[in-house]
Length: 388
Image (tube, rainbow, N blue to C red; front, side, top):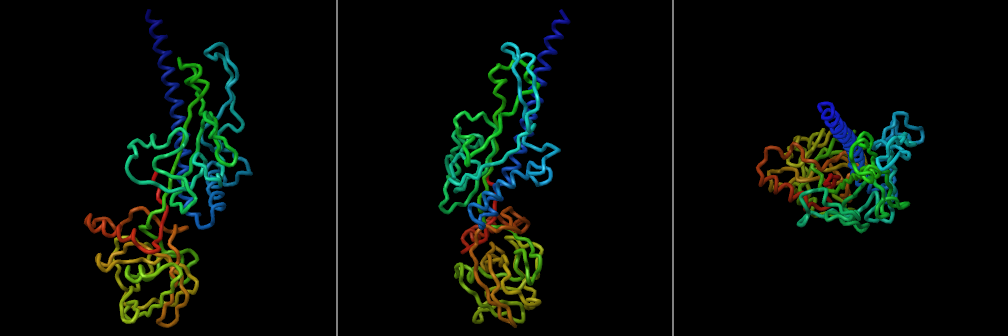
């Protein structure tokens, strides 16, 4: 009697253990896929200035690199990085598939290679569109994406998109949407391995586990920018060594020129009106920081053609930074600085939409005022933010 009970308990225990191990494999694979799509969605916005074709190719390249050991997909992958294992299962005996031969597939892991989806179909691997905040969005993120890949929080469009979606999937393509050439790609469902010895239904055992990973990055006002690699002649844009007021910035549009006189006390003037302040060459500038003048002019001449992210501050909100704009130096000679306002758009580098230290410790009403002023900036600088 005891031997029978031990046998039954051992059989159940090994079945449960098999399920736990296999579901752990699923969790690791899905996590690797999610990690890849999150970086790729942000890349889709960072590379938006390069054009639709270039950014989609950049996204596909980044995903392939994520699952490669040396960032060269043509050189093989001896470490077998991938989004979960893949196996071939031979025929077994009876309904339980007893004695079925399991062998590694070729390759033994799923290596995603997303399609560029230039037609921007909603079920594609990468989709440009607009992210929709608002009512009717369920609290459970798993309910956001329907079986046909339509979503309540994302509307595919190539007409002025502000967001970019990337997805990976391992499915058996039940609706014919997952392996459309040029549009979508898939890996085979994750296989049941140890759990094949359980009482799982044969059809479920043969089907494997379907999983998806989806991320959406949306363009949001930049809340912080890093330092330029050179304060006078940067090759990588960064925070300017001066700041401008919201009044002078919002009175301009992209392409406008802005001629400013530097006062000996570090103030920037237009017809005796203060429109900005000279600041120290920063390591980081963040929304919420108070703009403080150095009391001296810019230490040197800014190189013509240099691009900077200029902090914009609001005199009515304690002279705190509310956002950033993109400017180009036309000329800088003596005490005269001539600038050109550039289109805001998404910064390709050195900017973040993540809340930074400048807002820490401020009263909620001050934070609300700063963020509202930042959203209303003319040609405000944007940065990618993961919203799903």
